[in-house]
Figure 1 (cartoon, rainbow, N blue to C red):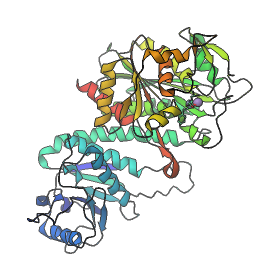
Figure 2 (figure 1 turned 90 degrees about the vertical axis):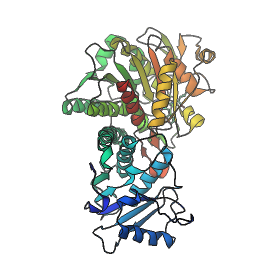
Figure 3 (figure 1 turned 120 degrees about the horizontal axis):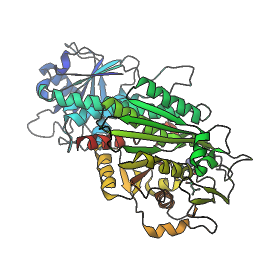
Figure 4 (figure 1 turned 30 degrees about the vertical axis):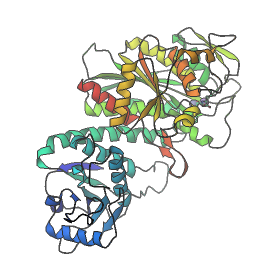
Length: 503
Ligand code: BES
Ligand code: MN
Ligand code: ZN
């Protein structure tokens, strides 16, 4: 999709449809002053009165996300107008703004709409500015028009949208442009994440993930990519990670992506993403229903790749390292068995009481490996626990960590990126639950507080740096009719990196 910014009046730009926002209750106030976005002054009197007729007929009241497609515009060069409700005439909440935007794209999924001009950058949104608005337009349009066709014979997509022009007032051109750059970078990162995650486990194997990372490095010279093979991991003593892949015919890979946009010896921000390309549970086999969704257990790894792509595209002046431990978790004669004890790279022994708690087993060795980068902070992201879905549903990602400043920065970034997180406590009392009779640690902590005990396990391997953990089990993909990856938390992490670059 091609996005651009224009300062010209919306009606003068050739396209299949222009998008105009309207507020609610336009005729209930005495002055009957119509409230259109872009502001009435930017629209011709003729078009204003045509829209006023549509509104007065009651076809649209202006509630948030309501839409009407006007497909004949008398006495005008404009082909079509999409009216989008913006709710009451006051600053919108960021969430409602995104709601209005996605309603707009969804009603533009028509074969005859290939190019649009979007006038909604002008909308007043609480605590935001033009840069943010433009960025959201790109992110939301990109998200709503994404369709997975890689493995369908018929590559037809519902949305034929190819060109989006965003109109902006003259004065805001510079900030609109920088919003566009950010939006495009983040949208690309999100698309990469979704495209990888939506692939099935028989295509997206650890080897495939590694190949894609290498490819990313080739197409982006700023990014250097290294793949660690099982033999090297063995030498490093990654007994925990390797115990998971032992039950799989697919060799494990540890993918390292390095981006040096900052000072030569500046400490890097290290992102670690769980790249479990299929989680059958191992010998502690998962129930059959919905098991297909465990192809999404690599979403953390995909989001690390997506975030690095976004960072490279924005040319952020930071040093960033992405680490993706990638493996399958399968039942097999050689697989981990409940009761097995393995030795991690850190030297701690782990009693595997449930082979389905494999994410922490591959992450713990990767956290130890992260130490060699002398990290400023380490953030891991993982579809780690079903318990996170129980606790928080699919709205925020779970956040836990050993550093308040880092956690606060992530909470703030999540809010401004509309990719929220909610912090859970990582108190020492919970550590009790991970005691093992036979090893230094057990890999599960019983049925209580599953998300917290999983993070407690990881925290044992994150003592030497500032660390935060994002449990994205509820936010990385949608289930049901619209099953598919969301690309989260790429917007959150991109925002965190943007904030870090600015400070
Ligand atoms: N990948 C799963 C977590 C998961 C479950 C994510 C459902 C999304 C939806 C993880 O490897 C796992 O199986 N966790 C177990 C841990 C348990 C055995 C302590 C879980 O959550 O059931
Ligand atoms: Mn599992
Ligand atoms: Zn898993």
